[in-house]
Length: 325
Ligand code: UDP
Image (tube, rainbow, N blue to C red):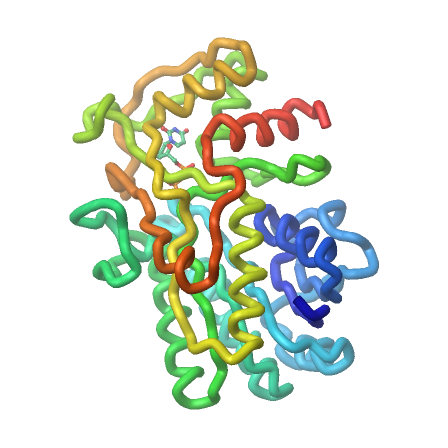
């Protein structure tokens, strides 16, 4: 692939920083825009980082011109489903208005391609599994709805401004770069695997959200996808768009589902320690099972996951969490 000049919003966050590292490894020129409200300065090389808010359209446009950006990967967004049910405007303002500001800057500067960080949450509680891209869109919370809204806005920007987009609908991003130094560090942390680690480290039991779902052991099934495999999907999508590919939506998952209890057992095997847990009530808005069909991404972009098994994903995440790297 030719070296490209890429703007990455939210590049100091979890998935963003792994993608930035991968882009740099492949020789691309990366400009990270992050307001560091959630991201971490130490996640990206100093020279790449521009501390800036997405709402600042003029500064974004100036930066894109100065750095001659050819395309954008857009991660910057709030991601906590539970919080979005309490504070919907926070999610609509940041995730939707922020994206609109970015799109204005792109139109103004003639940047015509964007890879957008979407989510399996756009499908709500799907009737069957695995989930394909043509399943009904029906978000169950303002977080998911904010992603649906941006996906729809992108369709209009394609029709009106010839701005092409790939929306990547992530399943459960997890793991860490095996080379070390990067990993999941959300505050507050709401994701299962880091919370299982925390239970081991603190002795405070994890709460399993419900064990009466119609699944093999009664706990929810999720498709855990290694963050480096997600990063690779962005880079393939970017090249596809730059080469003239039409706008598309793709699921990104392994196609393999694991229950919460299986995930706990996998962590126990990797860490060599028991996980203290209790079973609590279901969490509002949780779908029983979310497993991706990634056939479209595999066929159209030639993507395939390098780290598809849960044990490897957990090993990489555990090395980061236990500071072994
Ligand atoms: N989960 C759990 N206890 C926790 C956090 C998560 O049982 O403390 C479950 C949750 O109900 C879901 C799965 O773990 O079935 C993955 O949740 P996570 O928040 O990591 O991702 P989501 O699937 O909500 O995007």
